[in-house]
Image (cartoon, rainbow, N blue to C red; front, side):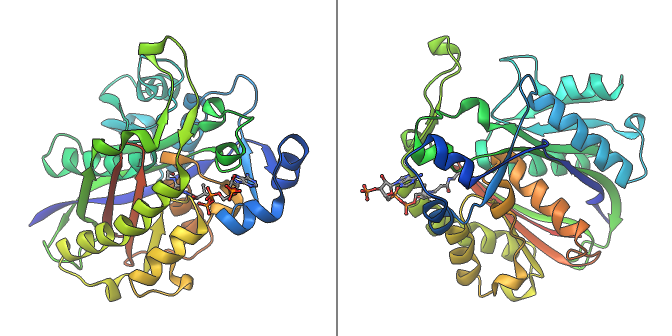
Length: 323
Ligand code: UT7
């Protein structure tokens, strides 16, 4: 018998304020047509003044617990992926722990930028299969609006705020690819590419800083690396790309999402796409897409899901799981 980390509950939260591309046309030298054509983005949610990542994360966590019929006291650990923590420390995960009224267990943040949720899932899976935790709340939450240079049209039109969460729970499996739960993970990073996507502030500069990106370069790496890592995860699970029911990609750019699906031999009807409504929400984009995919009745129990992402670092990876 093998211990598997299965998804017990899922949920998400998006701030109330929706900013359509037309609103950005008012303050920037940009057009709705350019943003849609280059990225597929039509609108994004933006956090209210004073609303921080921990607030979005807590709401998503409550939604996931409710969906799984669980209480905060049922959770052993929180693993939270973010690059936009409320403060330098403590971790957002411990803030969520306190907000939920959870007084036992442990909580920590994972920082792998847009690939953060993949790394968080992998960490949470390791906690479960090694017997250190039975139920782990895995959260991806971001307020990228706080690190946008709102005068830089090449970046600020692309990002949005949001949070998604799921509960992983230990379950006995047979050790075959037919088991429910996480079947494999595939993680990578290459710090030589730190300069193509970074924030120009932090503790070292005593400022928060703004996101800076060489979009074309990141695009090139994404198209080259995402299908490879997704394929590697599927192969490690003992399966083929054709066995995949749903591709749930990081939602950065519709053109990247489509190119990756094509390389994996899948039509777009097999892909969960939310980039038009959420923009790029970094580590929150995958749990948001998973939650929307489940809420819309697309992703169903027993189906094979592969999820993949790339972001600053560069850091990238994929997870294959049976829902
Ligand atoms: O989540 C982490 C991973 N991030 C990504 O995966 C993002 C990857 N990159 C991308 O998605 C795309 O590269 C972008 C959407 C950022 C840009 O698309 P692109 O096709 O690579 O365009 P570009 O950067 O080459 O810019 C083309 C032109 C430039 O003008 P010139 O130099 O050709 O005259 C830009 O100045 O578009 C101009 N431009 C804009 N025009 C109108 C850049 N931003 C805008 C804008 N509105 N907002």
